Image 1 (cartoon, rainbow, N blue to C red):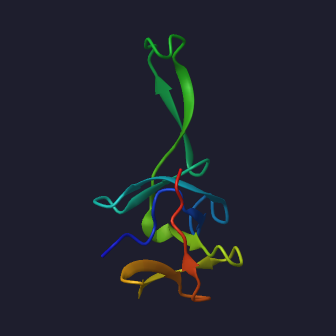
Image 2 (image 1 turned 135 degrees about the horizontal axis):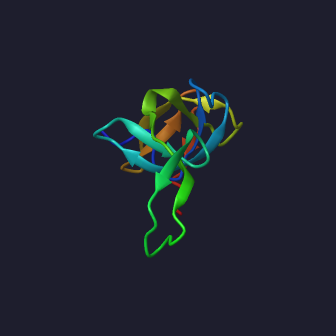
Length: 108
């Protein structure tokens, strides 16, 4: 079965310290059931000086969230929804369970 949340989708956080925040999915980790969402669940990490970052220091980066703690945003009304699948023209497409509209693929 195809993934219900994909890279580029806009999601809202349902639980945790960033509850209610929205962001775009940067990466999906299906084996770990995790997603990385832009500007959500920020953590501080200490980094050594490297050639790419000669200064080193403390950097802010996103930490993965469990996929059950995010919900897909319905493109028709910008509210959280669950995703389902339906066959249209011989292809499987994602649909919104709330409104039944097709959720288009986002290409970045």
